[in-house]
Image (tube, rainbow, N blue to C red; front, side, top):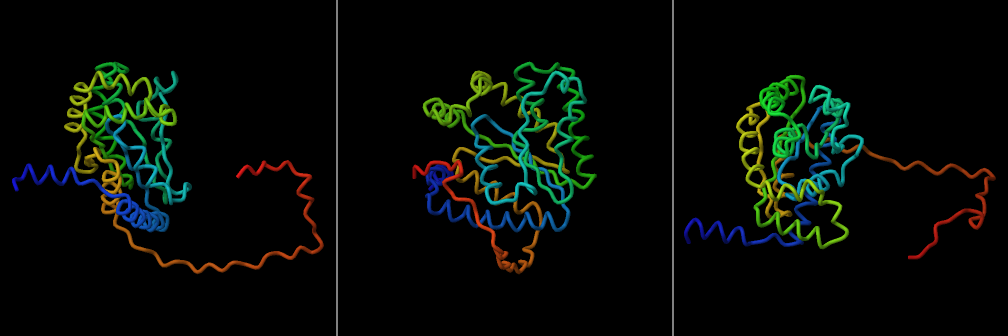
Length: 270
């Protein structure tokens, strides 16, 4: 079998539901151990998720956070900047969301908006764009020097797969909210986005915070591959479990609860 045929055969072999769910469960257990290590050691972790629209960033973020404590691991997905924020130092509105000791922050898109959508759609000037490419590496080096563990993922999806996912969202009313007007415009700027991504990588793929690219054409594999890779980037150990003893319930001491019919109960339809 030739190399190309072997690669094609591997690509065609899709991940079964049972294997996926088993692997995901194992990885999520490890994420809990990582979370406890981050809390115990006072680590400050930032994970950036960037990529094509409909590439599956939200899906992997959901699986990462599913079993974790939202007080330790939180998601930041900022809306478009306000008029006031547009006059601030570009990185200013992101800085306020950076983690304190014992926290992990997942950015569902980040300051890299300037190198992508803002550049392609003309939401920033060429001077602002060039300043970003110059400043961003220094900004990230500063974060790393301050003790932040900075991890960056780019989710890559083919033209054909993106089109398929867009059509699925259009035809599914429960998913249409995922398809913004900007997502639709991105289809007609596919090559421009590709060029912008290439320039972004060239300028910001630094040793202190390199880019990690995820093949996202198959969502389930992309989720497992990304989570598994994330777990290798932060050395951690499983901490001893604390023994938990359930205390006895307090004695009623004559207290009687009000009759249930006096409350405004939700109808039990199921």
